[in-house]
Image (tube, rainbow, N blue to C red; front, top):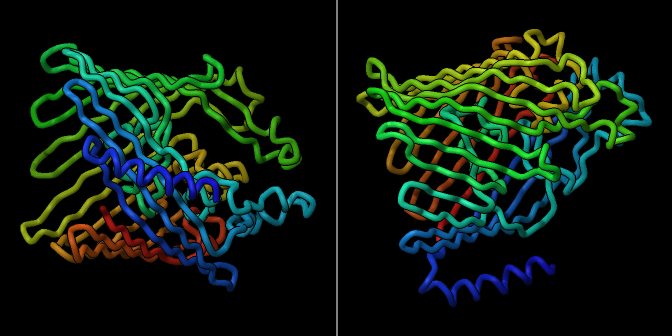
Length: 414
């Protein structure tokens, strides 16, 4: 209630300043239905986002406040989403440690709806200072990296929901510097402080353009939190179950046009410092890569495909361990299996845009089929609706026991 009163206070105050500030935002009610274990569950939310901004001669200020309420099913047992041969081995006394109550998780993750409490929070708040040859952005800001649509190997801050990969990502506290180095070469870098300096995150990227291609080379240092689930007894001792590793990524990305096709790629090799952790089994240096292409026909039909590979993940479903499943369900990894394919076809229209997405696990043969509809009856109103239908057998990446369902989201801008 106190948070709601604070929001009610902030909105009139912002309106009083609207002559000086740019004030806009949206209201977004959303409903999700999930069919699992012979039950059909409802999860609903209401989101109000207020954006505030101001552009000066050399300085830009931006911020947004979100107020979100959640309704419907408020408790989820992750064992319902685990393969039978794994969930059956979890002792009864530890089952409660796999129950996530309303408010335990900070985001909606993958195929599992993770509710969070009604809350008001500052998602972004930053100032951008434009000097003659240097832009400095300080504060909570977007740090999305890479050219991939569904997966971004060089983005060590965010994990996209493959059912809704374009949904906005949260802000992160950082200092970001962008500057030209040569006429056709620019530098992009950030520093995100951690609790200890050694656990801070840093990125350095060089960007250029050659012909019809934008290219970049990137190096990232990241403090990597990994949870050990394979030793079930550690679930009763969270401090020992979560370890911090340091990883160093070297890679790059590109995007451009080739023979009339839009093409992009992104990837890198990651060195993991195992000395700072307790030693999770099968954790080693790894490489990730994304390769995508798209094409628009004269009729307006748009098609796109993207392939993702992660050498750290298993190539066979029989090798998916409890660690792999839990890392996937809690967004510690971007996927469950080593090789994935994403495909999209849509026919855009001024009012209604039908689309079909397919996410396929090349590693185990399972798939998620996602028919989608976008409707824009007015300039200020957007409606998104989709179904998610899983085809895989128990134990596969996109297994039926993950729960078929759908989502309807209305967004009204102001």
